Length: 74
Picture 1 (cartoon, rainbow, N blue to C red):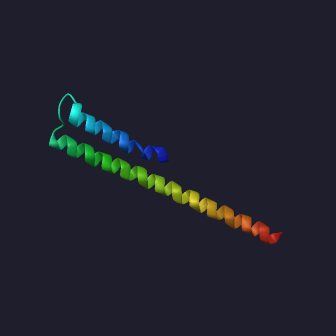
Picture 2: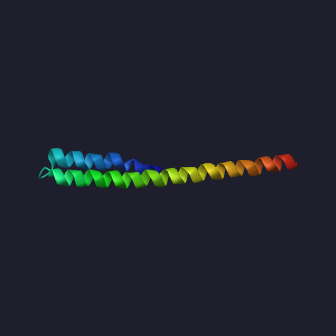
Picture 3: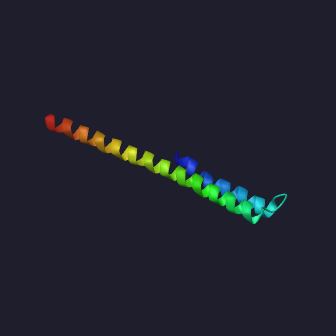
């Protein structure tokens, strides 16, 4: 999931190539649509990644609480 967020670099490279070396230069509307779509896509990816991060932190915290309870009982 973390690696999915790095695809933004690859996607930007595609845009750069299209602008610089593409068969035709994208229109202003095409560029705006592309960039807005990328913005929304990566907003979702980073939200999902952060949600997963919070779950892992909570799970880790819960596991530590369980471990500390076991130690106190012994």
